[in-house]
Image (cartoon, rainbow, N blue to C red):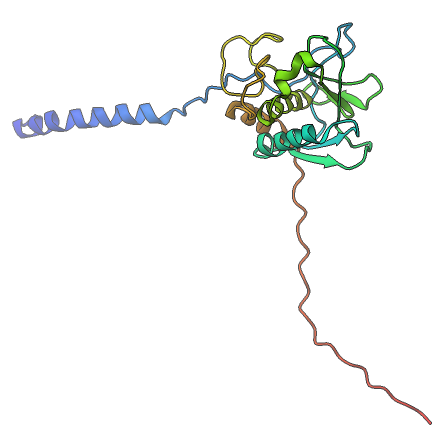
Length: 246
């Protein structure tokens, strides 16, 4: 090989190797880490525990919420805030029902249920419309969401942020979100999410991983938008002539 060609290869080879290394480093897509529990049903709703509780999924991407008349207005405000701010940015559409219907997914109740170990919980009643979806998860309409206004759990209702945190948490259980870590105690990984347990002063929002899991689960359930009918060209209006016969 001529000496000039060898000198050229010595100059070019490092550049070619660096280009190949960079190409190999960027060609493989980076896997997104997601430490949140996946959306799914959890626990048998009929287990003999007090209070009874379980996690179910929704049957579609429209989640209808009805307030029992006994729920005080200040608590309704916090639940509505959680519906809007925590779940509004997701593929779920939270809808408040003015009356209880067969399509209602969640019935919100509130009262003093005693020092039973929970400030809030969700259960799918045995007589509620329910079934198993294609993923093998229990869906349930008419889930009952309870807020325990017993004085022992006053810290969970002390201010709007605390109430919204609890509302975000319990609504999460109605759509298949579980505690971060091993319920009922939250173990690492921990992060700013309303799905941590036993945190009355926690964030009123979902972590982005929770939102990502909701979107992956419910976005395929969203109905396609109905195409608008094309309007026919506007035709000139013709005023009929009146004929009178005598």
